[in-house]
View 1 (tube, rainbow, N blue to C red):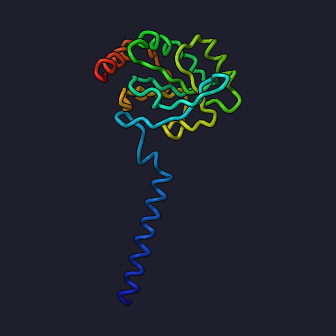
View 2 (cartoon, helix red, strand yellow; view 1 turned 180 degrees about the vertical axis):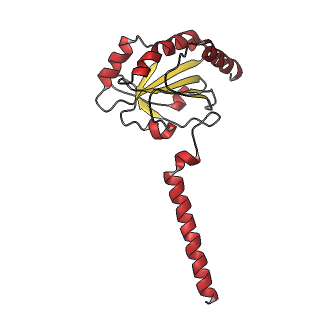
View 3 (cartoon, rainbow, N blue to C red; view 1 turned 90 degrees about the vertical axis):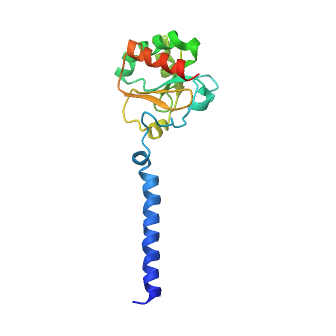
Amino acid sequence: MTARQQWAIVGVVVALMAGGLFTASRFLSEELAPVNVGSKAPVFVAATLDDKPATKTLKDYKGDVVLLNVWATTCGPCRIEMPSIDSLYQHYKSQGFKVVAISTDPPGMTQAIRDFAKEYNLSFDILYDSVSAINPQYQIYGYPYSFIISRDGVIHKKWIGPDNWNSSENRKLIEQMLATSQ
């Protein structure tokens, strides 16, 4: 085998490895960069429920401590936890705490989401992501899924399933984050 043939083989191997790394980074991005406590929260895009919906992103909440809750109107556990989320919000909203609840119901469910919010008398921001784009961004595979995000955009708590968000443990976490991230 000549030197030229050897270099050709090396070139093919390098090209195959580069192609494999590119493919892995595209299709395995969730496994390569998991969304966990300590990681930066990915940017989301969702719409308000207004008659003329506006787009909101995580950047709209920069400087606030955020409880991001991803849910759907058909989710029974979501219904269970919503009152405690609103209680927590009512207690800390004047201190820079925001709740952003993003519904991932299918297209055409705007009125059902509004009715849900009215039924539970929810006072925090409820947004709509009808294409569920947030699910792969935040690696969400069920509902409810919640994240507490600091003022600088770092995830401090990740919770799968319903929780009593107004519990003393969650209040303590919110108080610590409000006090230390000003």
